[in-house]
Length: 389
Image (cartoon, rainbow, N blue to C red):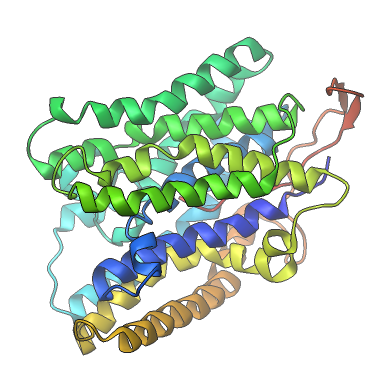
């Protein structure tokens, strides 16, 4: 087994780009082709949830990890940048004359803000997904312990989690008519998002144990792209205001597609040829490392730009595209600076790891696992979990 899965890090950048395009299209203005395709790019957050479960399972399978120690490691990973970008968001909001309820801000710092509809966007709006991630981190050690050695549970559990998204969407008519409450229940409540994370955990375990057939990467990526293409005519036929529209479906349906894509990418990394350069090359991995910071800062930049310059005139495609490139590029460079200057140093400090050293995990017991054709000796994996949310 390889020590790391670089293609999964590379995929993080593309998922973050999907979210950035989603905000640019809806807040700045549409660009032909990219605008319609990214109109429901909020599905990128669903990808992050599945990815988080997959990589955590890959990393900690067979590792005796106390819940408290695991929580401290995850705190070191995500909280320092969350706190900083929350301060930046509040500072930008104050400069722009926005008023944010103090309670929402206070609930966001301990990552409890997604448990009530009125506080979801407290502090930094983009950080709502961190509230769900915090819940996943609390759940994960117990989930992994429950699944260890019980392979018969994995397939039915994965099927149940895959079906949960469409089932929740079909329950739309039974939910409160208030769009804010209905949107919170379907899109932001951590319990609603839990099946996506659990599906990632089961997929990661199955790949780790060699239980899945080989999945070609190109068809898996094409299936994800096809899903987003399908959303374009669906949006034309059903507006976002109705429950049967694609707004909630965009993020409730594709978790199984993302699990297949992650499986295919991980299997490529495990194989003799390694991952493709588009995902596993040095530049791709570096951009993937920056993607957590990019996710947290890009929306702040969009708000500041709109306050200062406003939206481009309707139909001004060239001007809109230029603003897209400017905001995406500047926020990506800022994310790189935050990664190197804040995120990694704070993580090393809180974990007590050397400046040039990795973040060591508990020693994996060396044991033999039966693969489909031949046994392999499992050594300690050092693939680090996604910083996303």
